[in-house]
Amino acid sequence: MMNVKCFEFNFLPVNTYVVWDETLQAAIIDPGCYYEGESDVLAKFISDNRLQVKWLLNTHLHFDHVLGNTFVEDTYQVRAHASDLDNSWIVFMAKKMAVFGIRYEGHVNPIGPENVLKEGDQVRFGNTTFDIFHIPGHSPGSLVFYNRAQDTVFTGDVMFQSGIGRTDFQDGDGPALIRGIREKLLTLPGNTVVYPGHGPATTIGREKPMLL
Image 1 (tube, rainbow, N blue to C red):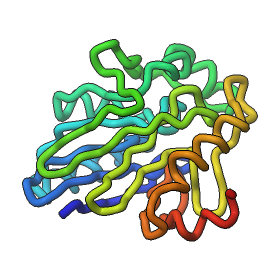
Image 2 (cartoon, rainbow, N blue to C red):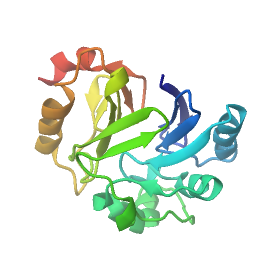
Image 3 (cartoon, rainbow, N blue to C red):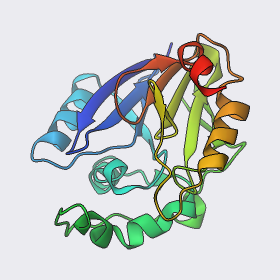
C-alpha cells in the first residue's frame, strides 16, 4: 500500500512529496526546501517514520522544485533523477532566480547521463512502481510519475486542480502541453488521484471536462 505525505516548501510554494509503502522504502519528489528549518522538517518526518530513501525524483528542473536537491542527495546518498532536457534551468539557476528578485548562492547538480529518466522508464522501490510519462510544454523535460496499482499520478506543473502549467517561458510550448495532457493523462481512469506541484490534489475525472 502506497502512502503519500505532502509538504509545502519555499516562497511559491511547492508541493514536496514523500512516498513510501509497507517496506518503508521511499521516494522524495521535488524537494523544495529553501527557508531555514524546512529541510529539518523533511528529515524529521523521514526519521520518525524510519523510512529508507531510495529515490530522489524531480518532475522538472525549475528552480522552485530543486532547491532541496543538494540536501537530499547529501543526507541520503542518492542522486536526483529527472529529464536532462531541463538542465539549463540548473546551469543558469542563480540568474533565473535573480529575475524574481531572489539571491541564490547554493549549488544544485545537473542531471547526469546515468540519472536521466525518459518516457517508458519505470522507477521501483519496495513494492511500488512508477511509470514515467514525458509531457513537455511547461518545460522541455517535464515528467509525470504514475502508480498504476493505486491510480495515483504526480504531475508536477503539468496539471493542477482547475488548471495547467504556464507555457510563457522561453522554452514553453502550449500546444505540446495540451496534447500531452489529453493523450497521456485524460486517458487514465477518472478516479486517478492527481498530486500536482502546487495546490491541492484533484482527480482526472474532475479535470477532464475542462481540458477536452
